[in-house]
Length: 561
Image 1 (cartoon, one colour):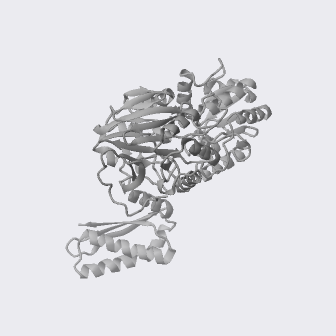
Image 2 (cartoon, rainbow, N blue to C red):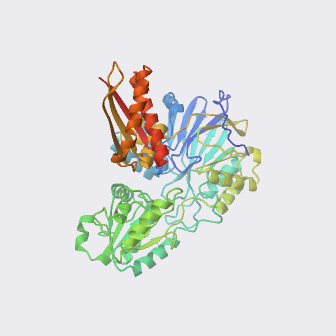
Image 3 (tube, helix red, strand yellow):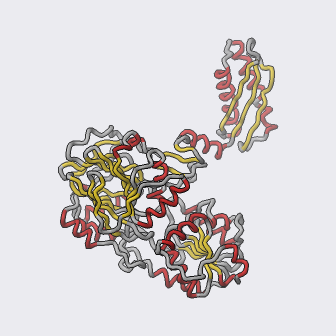
């Protein structure tokens, strides 16, 4: 198995007749999936998603893939294929289209509807090409065939890209539910047909490669939901992804059976379910869904609320209910169902919400204590089956953290894919398919790009480090006025601290030290404000460190008069 090497340099010129694959996101993380294919000087992008920030990225709203490597080549991009409508696959599209709005978007009906609604907020009207399974479209030099795959959102597609360099298959996100609610199976017959023709390189979803066995069928959840609905005394509040149409269909069906009305809460939930209903993916019996405002007229045991926030996101409806910061107040006897997975890194946030809801008396049903969620990604048993059906000549695991990619590679090796034809890459690592063999040839820039409010890319790692220090250790500011000719102090020092845990009165001890240091520098003829500021910072920093063993951010201001 070839692994990435940190000392990789920029990739060489792509040999004629070779195909280059550059993942810009989604490898080494779960999120911001984006892969660029290059053939004959033209580019095809598959997916362009976002990653949601973690606690060590304070103030960040979203994390985008780094477009640097393609920024001056946007005219070479023949299209963006979107495999399905999840945020981690479509959320970055508005930011890429801001730079060139006429790049065509290719995807299924639901996927395009979800991205168009999102682009409307950014005031972009995209060029779109709607495809469905079985379609073949020529996009520049890329001959793309689309295949049905089953996932936790309807209308997900895999794409087979044929070029003279060979056939590459990108699965998108998939699992192999054999009894899917909408009857739309992962098309194993089509994959085996491609396998017969010869898949030169398979890019395969690795999210659940560490999980043994098979994902249970979606429909097993229905009976669990029915059971919860039949025993719930008061309101039922369900948290789900705003795009999991099948899960929400199951909730609507259960509500209908038990004579309850349903209200959607949260902008994304209301919007996406409206789209799903209009396009016929969500079947809503007449009168079942009502506006939140009319709930006051209904008894508690006839109410179901469907909201977002199943990942513990602080601003989503469920977290706010747990914090008593939402118009819906949880009371003793309410039932809350978290119908979702635990995305790696979100566990603490989710348990915090579960504890908050339980404190107010809610009965919380979640994946840990009931079968109210099944994953959208194939487990190890399914991946083995899949590799045996496809029999790819080269394998490149995608969509996962390091542990997932490694596990997926090992499954591939177990099915007989030669070790020297399995490539484990990470974001920015360039893989070239030349003469039927895939290998790592270089590395391009693929850092995190932070969206903070309206700014994209202005927040850097160093400013996040500053925010972390401010959040962890607080800040001390010192204001001193010196005479520009003599360098003597004529005003101050004034010291203020916030969040440092040091009482303003305690700074009396460091004042003489500042005076002494400045007096000495005045004797040495140092009068440049920048040097004086550094001197003040060192003096105060040493004192705080020696006295309190703390390292707050120190902001000295020296003004000359």
